[in-house]
Every structure is written in structure tokens, then in C-alpha cells.
Image (tube, rainbow, N blue to C red; front, side):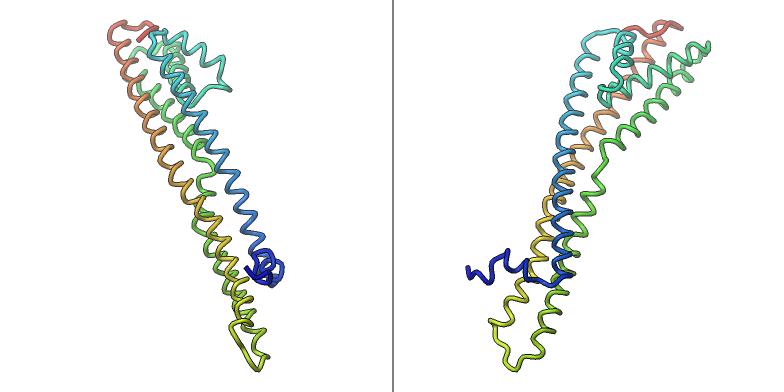
Length: 233
């Protein structure tokens, strides 16, 4: 490649506005990749914690023991364990208030778990909107830089008597670099967004399934043990 048409040369010799657009897109790309890796590790951790708690939940450990463990490890617990803890906490509070009606007990526990579920989902979905914005806006920002660069290039050629491809090419090439950087920022963000949205949907479905299963367990315990606190499943 001719040295005058190298990417570095084109960037360094672009107009101020185009350089500003390129700098913005590079910064957005770096932030996007940082968000992608943070979300990747966070989702892996969420899946591992949920699977570990689910194994323990179905291992036959009593609900009271599980609740005591969840309360003790609240900060390091996964979403499923915190949802379980919120349901058990509300259930026990209602029992302490001498509420006997099974429907009231189950509705209270279910509402508490649903509220906790929404909070956990909000945390899991954090940064997704940023990736969506990067994926949708970056190409247009790059296109703006390209249009501005081409306008600047043609304005500079207006005073020339003879215009050849050699005189036009550098200006257009440096303008097109902005579009290329915009696509470089957008494509990974879009791919990551779609992947994470799918993974989060699977996590959400698993949490909803757990809420239903735990509600059924509480209902069975109420039906078989009368007014005693559920201690097993």
C-alpha cells in the first residue's frame, strides 16, 4: 500500500471534525469491549451460582437450613438463592404474625420472590442498553464523519483547475475510515447484545421456573403439615 494512503496517515491527516469522530468511535469501541467482557464474566458467575444453589436445593436439604445459609451468604449469593431467601423471609414473617390462611402465605411469598426476581433481572440486564446504543448509533456517527470528510475534501478541490483520481482519493479514503471505525465499534456490540439477550432470557426462564417450583413446595408443605413452618421438600 502506498504510504500516503496508509490507515495511520489517513487518520493523522484527516480534518479536525473527522478526527474527533474517529476518536469518539474508538473510545466507544473500547468502552463497548469492556462492557462485553464484564457482562460475559458476570453471566458466567450467575449461571454457576444458580446451578450450585439448584443442586443444593434439590439435594434434600431442609428449607430452613437453606434459608439460614442464604441469609449468611447474602452478598455472595446468586440470583436464585436471593429469590429463595426473599420468599422464605416473607413467608416466615407472615407466619410470625399468626397468619393461618394458606393462600395469604403463598401470595405473600410469591410477591416477595417476584419483586426480588425483577431486581435481580435488572442487575443482570445492566449494560445491555449501552451495547444496543453502540450497535445502532455507531454506524451513523461514522457515516457523519464520512460525509463531513467528503464535503471537506471536495471543498478543498474546488480551487484546483485539474482534478484527478489521485487528488480525490486521499480525501475520500480518510473520510471512509470513519465509517470503517463505526462498523468496527458497532458489529461486536450487536453480536454481543444478541448473545447476552439470549443468555439472559434463559436465566430469566430458569428463575421463573424456580419460583413456580418453590411455590408448589410451599403449598405442599402447608397442605401436609398444617401450620408448621416448612422444613423440607
